[in-house]
Image 1: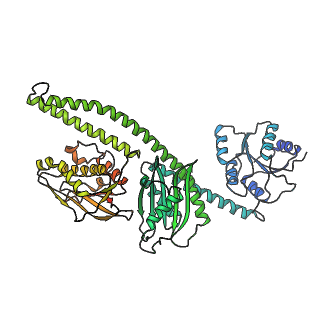
Image 2: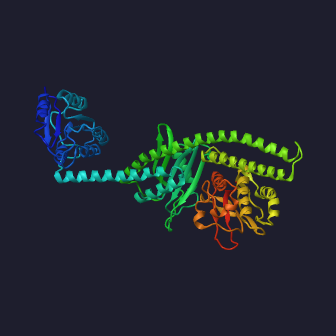
Amino acid sequence: MTRCFTLLLVDDNLSQIAPLRDFLEEAGYRVRTADNGMKAIIAIYQRPPDLILSDIPISEFNGYHLCRILKNDPLTHDIPIILFSSQAEPHNRFWGEKAGADAFLEKAAEFPRILATIEGLVKGRRKEATESPARGAQGLDGKAIRNQITGLLDRLLYESTISNEILKLTGLAHDSEALARELFGFLALICRYSAAGLLLREGADKYSIFLQLMEPVSDGFIEHARKEILHRAGLDREAAGKYRFLLIEQETGGGRAMPVSFQVLSSLPIHDGNELLASLTLFESGQRRLTEGMSHALDVIADRLLIVARYLKKIKDIENVKADLVSMLVHDMRSPLTGISGFTNVLAEGILGQVSPDQGAALQNIQEGCTRLLALIDDILDYSKLEAGKMQVSPRPLDLAPLLAQILGSFSLQLQEHRLRVETELPENLPQVMADEKQLTRVLSNLISNAVKFTPDGGHIRIAAAPAITRQKQPALEISVSDTGCGIPEEQQKTLFDRYEQLPSATVYRKGTGLGLAICKEIVGLHHGDIGVESPIADGAGSCFAFTLPLALP
């Protein structure tokens, strides 16, 4: 019986597989042979068989290489490949599957089993009485085929390099801004574009949008780009409060300004099933179009970025569980501490009997310890909520001057005790800011508290407000708190806003949690503002902490 299918047997020792060849020919197959990988490649490209049966240890290209090359070339990827070998170790089967083999057989397998595997793979393939060259391979000689293989290997190396670079981003899953910067830095090396947008899911219904500018932009582009990123991701109807927006500018060095009217070079939403995890959007101000190479590179990036986004989602899920656990533990710790604090007050006030001066001092120490522990519990709870994206802010138009006066009033005793002078420099007709009053109070209280702690007796603190522009090119108010303390070394300024970070020189003040500035950073970020520190380390220069808040709309 003639099946009109052609098989290619690849083996260094053709005499060893002669019985198998005879068996397959008797079964009605046309059988061709090749005794090394390069001869097999040439035979396949010139007259493609219906199925390839290859040993693994062959010269030129081994069976794994042969399989990987053919399965990654559109001209040959549909040809079934069976790897068969006397090497029956589990890793041989594993690498065969990873190389793309359709089946793996041991050479010791019985011929009927081999035949059944072949028939299962060629079943349904179009039967042809005569062989024809592979589509697109007509007229290829040995040199042209080698060039084809070289180009394919270059592409595989290119894809592997891209994959490795993108998968490195999993190490930055805890810092999405650093992740975005690294991704944009790599994109700029392999693609040409005017601007790039990255949307990342940061938690349940929480997203971060990062926009990288490679050229100067015109007024209105940033807002248009932000809307376009959301629209392309299918999120244009979502509430604006669910997004954190951050602008990342490159050194543009002048050049053309991007118009408000622009083209989208590429938009790649990245889904895990029906769930949107990320989106990558490229913008162009001119007439540039995506080349085939750029398009392929972006597809590979999007494919690997899905792995990174899944990892990021997993981390956020773990942080949610951690936040719930911390919340439960904090609640259980707060109750006994509140009881201790209450009974300490009862004792200190003499309600249960006369208290001696020494006993009063001891009770005061207990009360101060309870107060510090309760503050620590509140900080841990709030930071865990911020980290898990569960902290909610409700910005509304807010007047800064009365809020600042109220906060300073709560520090009046400390200011008097240390003879600290406070200067406030607020412009006339101070505009309202969009802020959550409770959270803004926390930021200002923390910065003023630090200034009080680190300013020597008789020093002064300056609180000022001035118009500013955020990194998102939005009008804002910059609020600064300056002191005349010891200052902060430059190398420590870089990590000062990290959690649990404290100054080594601040040993005498180590009554805090190391979370205050980290919480301030998160709260300011939720308001779409920026926070930073400047400290020139000069006598009396001290430090200046400043943050921005968006202005309220008229």
